[in-house]
Length: 187
Ligand code: B4P
Image (cartoon, rainbow, N blue to C red; front, side, top):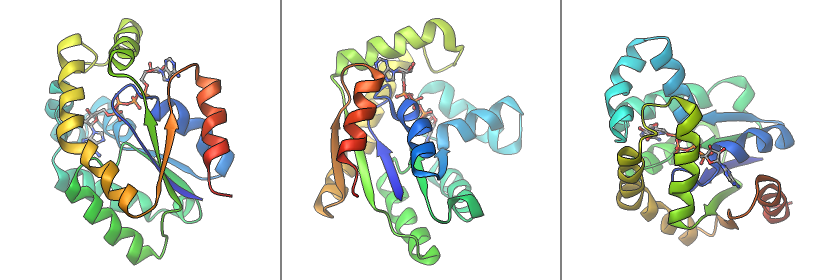
C-alpha cells in the first residue's frame, strides 16, 4: 500500500507513520527525519536546510523535491511506503504526481490526522522538554502552525477532491489513533 500522512506539526504524523510502515511492510519516508539526519552529519543538504528548519520555515521546494525523488526510486519503496511530511506545498504535490507517474506507483490513500490547535501546541511544548530540536521553542512552534495553515492546509482540499482523503480523528492516546487509522485504511 502507498500512503501519505498529513496534518499540522504535532498531529502525530511521525509517531503513527513509524508503526504504520511496519504494518504495511513498506518504507517510512519522513522528510523531516531525512533533513535532521543531514543537519546532524553537516552534509551539504543539511547545511542548506538548517536555517529554514530552525526558523520554522519550509525548506525550498527544489531542495526537498530532489531529495524525495531519489528516495522514492529506491527498491524498498517500490511496493509500499508511507510518506510523512511530504508534500507540504502545491508545488510539491505537482512534483510528487510526476514522480509517481514516472515510477508507475500510484497512491492508495492520504491520511489526514485532525487535532485541536491548542492540543498541538501542548504536545510540541511537551516534546520541547526532551527533544533538543531547535524548532521546538514556543515562538517557532506557533510560527510552524501558521506556515502549515498558509502553505499546507490547501492540500487537504486537493486530495479530498480526488477522492483520496481519509480523515482520522487524531485526538486521544497514540494506541486509540492507531486503531482508528487501521479501521479507516482501504482494504
Ligand atoms: P517534521 O519532522 O515533519 O516535524 P513536525 O511537523 O513537527 O511533525 P512530527 O512528525 O515530528 O511530529 P508528530 O506530529 O509525530 O518537519 C520539521 C521541519 O522540517 C519543518 O518545519 C520544515 O522546516 C522541514 N520540512 C519537513 N518536510 C518538509 C517539506 N516537505 N517541505 C519543506 N520543508 C520540510 O508528533 C509531535 C509530538 O506529539 C511528539 O512528541 C509525539 O510524541 C506527540 N504525540 C503524537 N501523537 C500523540 C498523541 N496521540 N497524544 C499525545 N502526544 C502525541
